[in-house]
Image 1 (cartoon, rainbow, N blue to C red):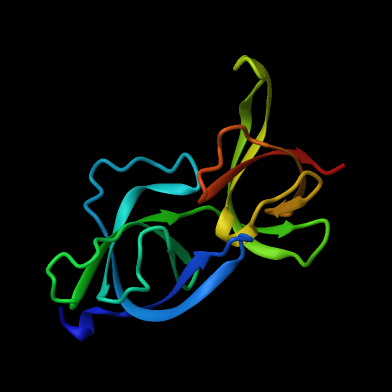
Image 2 (cartoon, rainbow, N blue to C red; image 1 turned 60 degrees about the horizontal axis):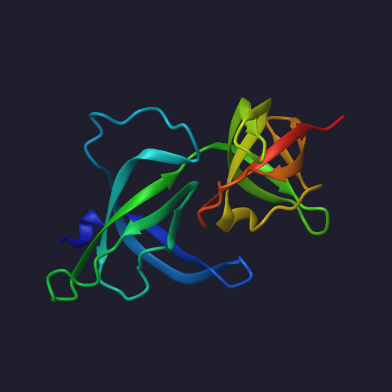
Length: 184
C-alpha cells in the first residue's frame, strides 16, 4: 500500500455504554465503493452497497466501530484482525449511513445534527402483526442521537415531527426506527 493512496482523514468512533460517541483518534484511509452493478436505491438509512476502506493496521479499527470523514458516516461491518500477519494493511467492508440532514431535538438537552431516512405512509403494525394504520417512519443512527424518547422532536427539511413511539424490532444497535407525527 502506498501512502499516496490514503487520501481521506477519518475519525474513528465507537459507542459507550451510555450510547454517546467515543473518539479513538483519526487515521488516513482510502475509501472506495465496491463494484455496484446490482446496488439498488437505499430503502433505509444504510446504503445497500458496501464500501471498501483501506488503512494502515491499528487495533483501533475494529468491527462495530464507525468512521466519519466529513459528512460521510461509515459503519465497519467487517474488519479482519490481521489477515496477512504483517500488521501493515487493513482492508475493511463498511456500510455507509445515508440520509437527509436533520436536527434531533431531545426534550432535555441541546439539538444535535443528524441524518435521517424518512418513509411516509409506512404500515403500522399492532401486537399481532396486522396493519392497523399508515404513519411516518424515520430511521436514525444511534451514534448520532443515542436512544430517542417519546416526546422528542426531529426537524426534517423545515418540518417538525414529534417522536410518538419506537418502531418495533427496528433497533439493531446501529440504526433505530421511530414513528413520527407532524407537530401541530
